[in-house]
Length: 79
View 1 (cartoon, rainbow, N blue to C red):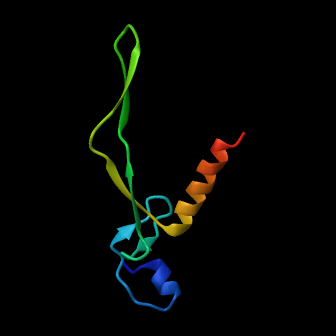
View 2: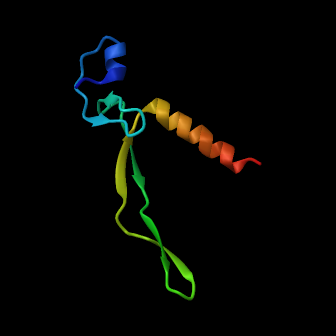
């Protein structure tokens, strides 16, 4: 698989990751790595406890999806 962004620019580069949102093949120069927190809510019967696990889940995302997600997150803060 080739990097989609590079291919649009006429460059032949192998993809090393796939965007988790849109499925676009990405080279090292166009892939953004993010870490997702792993959270859980445990109901002890007398109340709930939210815990965050120490290990994160890695994910790769392209620039376009990253921008779209960030604009959504900025929009949530307004209101």
